[in-house]
Image (cartoon, rainbow, N blue to C red; front, side):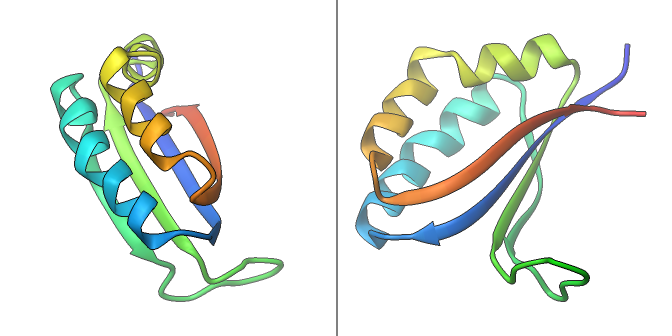
Length: 96
């Protein structure tokens, strides 16, 4: 079974306090659901139409596990804490 990855790109951070509250709840919810953080931070270098923005990549053992983590009550609490504090693009991608 191929692994799956959350790829999250932050287009804008509107409220750093809300982002901090989200991170405090999201980290344990994601790792508790089997996620492993592979990269997080601002892009080192961008090409083409890229935007120098915060990007997070999280590995899961399967697409089903990644979806379950996103839909979990713990992660929902993190999203509620974030509210309108950031504009993000989150995708779940199956590994090759």
